[in-house]
Length: 260
Ligand code: ATP
Ligand code: ATP
Ligand code: MG
Ligand code: MG
Ligand code: MG
Ligand code: MG
Image 1 (cartoon, rainbow, N blue to C red):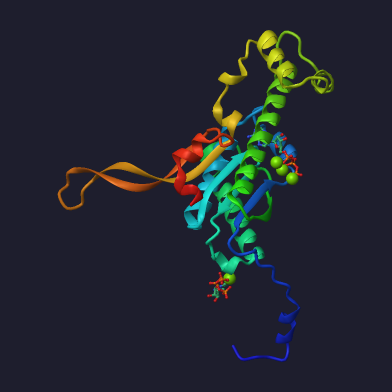
Image 2: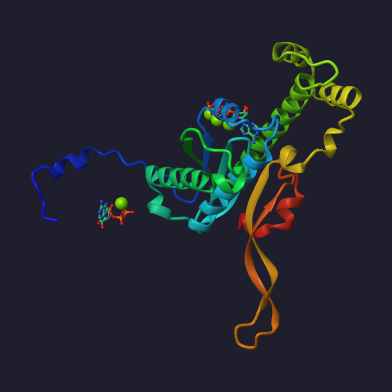
């Protein structure tokens, strides 16, 4: 297009680029999901449909953006980790976070019926997004540990809170449950769950306790050969979803390609 006398306004733009050679973490978080989850009758403390929908939306993002090494989700949030070598959108912050966030949100809306069936989406959800650069693997692992520790603390609290509120024999009000839990540490919450409700916290769904980690992995996949029509086993890049500990060493030792 020919230059016009208006074009100078572009010079007012203030592009932010994300520091080269650093891990870029983009975290999305649902806007006002306390209300959204109420309005859509999410099961408390953990709605499995919602968590699987979040994971499916994250998978769509990972299929679109090649340089994402892994993603971690819990509650209404998802973190995406880009490798230090990435030059996605020339590392322009606004481009990265807005495209990622809108693709995630659009997928969340499109796939809603696959997870919530005939229950309608009663208003449009939105997510916020931010990008943070981490210069070292240690920083990145501490970031992952931070989110997973947050998942654990919130989930232990929420599990105890909803056990007290939804107790069929002696239901507590939300205020009462909050007052009871205010003075408890982790051990006391575990104790309440076990003695009053027969719940062994360690036995509840690892998706709730650990959050979801999505990553690419080379895996043997059984296929039918196009040439021969015979079954064959091929190594393929498969998008794995696991509900595992990412604070300790073993996940990273089993998947060294994620950090190299
Ligand atoms: P903000 O806009 O500041 O993020 P928010 O209401 O989304 O506010 P968060 O701190 O992000 O607050 O917390 C998300 C809330 O959404 C949780 O407290 C929980 O009530 C609810 N929630 C999210 N995912 C689920 C789920 N899978 N099952 C049940 N509740 C959920
Ligand atoms: P980028 O991702 O860089 O923005 P783009 O393909 O979206 O790439 P744009 O410069 O934003 O490129 O141009 C948008 C293009 O979308 C137009 O060139 C046009 O082909 C198409 N388009 C957008 N809106 C309409 C419309 N209402 N009717 C027909 N075509 C449209
Ligand atoms: Mg928030
Ligand atoms: Mg939120
Ligand atoms: Mg949140
Ligand atoms: Mg465009």
